[in-house]
Image (cartoon, rainbow, N blue to C red; front, side):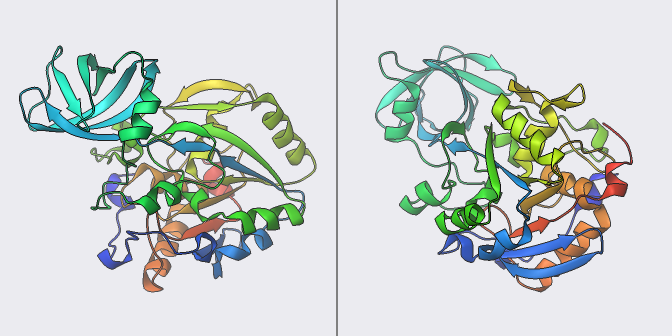
Length: 351
């Protein structure tokens, strides 16, 4: 398939620039590929879509205040987005400036501290932070929440709580696992009351999640890399749910990529790793049976994954329905629940 196959026209007013006042008051479009049904629901009723034998898998990554503003030693303004902390005082970061800084130059950030540019790591810059103060402490004290690039406003106090899931636990993401933003204490309690098992994996979402696909032929796209982790107890509980006939419900595309990347030798394997898995139509899914996800940008890798899961024509029809009915799109927007994967798409072939 070509990049243009995943294009659609979205009225700008449907881009959600702020979160819904109450997380679980967002809308939920329910899709059943087995009968091509579309149903307009409320997210507060999400638990009603599940059965007690199902298992729900969340991504417990936590968004860090990774965006820093400052100036170069030459005086020009600079914006730093920390992608990954690689050592106690070293990071790999995106650096935006009128002219890329040289190795050996210094950046003065937040009118509070300076860092040295020590080299490059592919498209990223390697920066050396001050010793004696941890990188995370400096980010927490001086950093901004890295809102998606289409939200063209400074981060506000509300974003520090709302661009974060209620179960966020493991710091390291620079973008939220947005399907999880709809869950609040009430929805989590409803899952528990229905006896639905929940487990957690970790995938630290990188800024590459917003990277556009720039090639027409999808086979030529180079996917960004992200780190993930899941433990043996989670693998065992997922296997047990499958054995009792339950579905594995992925909360977001990041969970899909984690589980599919960790499936080796016919089973899920615990551990840490990196994934650059690019899922497009024709991919054979091995671990995930149902998917909760937000509405994604045109021509994005996330939309391609969802089309692989439920079928291209079906998802594009669902997007047209969502637009016609005023759903809110992207990170702070509404969600869709695909209650079963498309078996035709799933069996079409492996990557």
